[in-house]
Every structure is written in C-alpha cells, then in structure tokens.
Length: 185
Image (cartoon, rainbow, N blue to C red; front, side, top):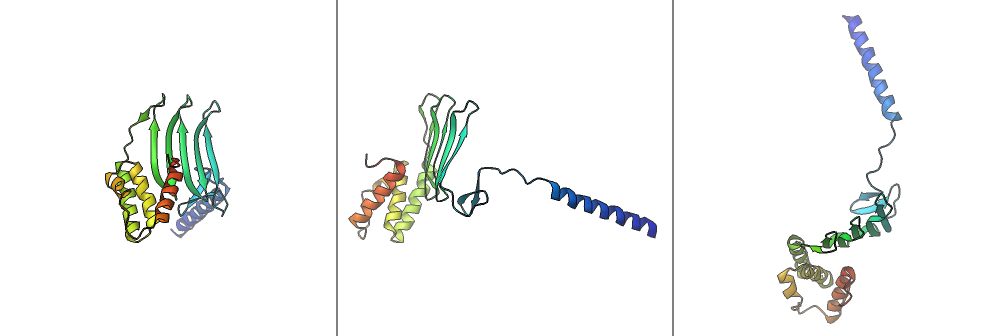
C-alpha cells in the first residue's frame, strides 16, 4: 500500500510539473481590441497615457468600415459605414457618455431614432446637476435630452433657474452645440 501511495504521489508531482511547464510556454492571449480600458479610460496596450487618436477598421476591399475617435482616453465619436460607403451608424459622446446615436440604411435613409430612454436619462442627469447648482454641466445634458426629443428638456431650455447667468447659459449652449456639431444652426 505504501508503494502504491508513493507511485501516486510521484505521478501527481509529474503532472503538476508538466502543467506548470506547459502554462509558462503558452503565448499570451491575443488582445481583444487595440486598446485597454481601465476605469472607463482607453489606453494603448502597455501605456499609462490615455489614448488620443482614432482606431479604424476596414472592409476586405480596403474601404473604411468603422472609425472611433478618442481624446484623453474618452470616446468622442464612433461611426460605421455600409459596404457601399453610406454611413450606417454614428454615436456622439460627451465625457465618455453616449449623447446621441443615428442609424441609416444602405441608401442613406435614417432608421428610426428611438432615443426615449437615452433622453430621459440625460434629462434626469441634467436636472440633478442643476439642483446642485452645476448649471453649465446640467444644461449641457438638458440640451442633449432636448436634441433627443425629451419634452420636459425642451421646455427647460426656455426656463432657466434664476441664479443661472447669461454667460452660463451661453457656455452650456456652446458646449452642447460643439458636441452635437450644430454650431448654432
């Protein structure tokens, strides 16, 4: 019996050594994307500097299929195209948070903008910030909600808190229009 237990221990020790040796020789797994995300910030693999630039994907024919633009590790814009070159999707972000999204079919016709849930969350965030007297940031989010069709947000753009200055109103509007690409149009 002692002889049997000794052989089992030797076999188990050999298996353990083989497992450790095999584990060390395996190559590291391929990265899932070109960037690492840590605490909501994107970094190039092995870097401690937040990524600024664009990540592009291409169709097999070499044409651009998708592009994502980052600044200081935060996503600003994400677009994709159909194989015929027509825009398929566009997502705009503010401080890493989705602001608005659009979808188009292969002929370039917009596909329904179901933004109700996004707009409601944006409006709530805006009103919460205004309640904390963070007027500029709050009204930026209220502008986004209004752009996405949120009725209460649309009303709020005409009814500013008494403590909010004209400069704060103008700053919030400029930030929102800059993100949305409307530039006062």
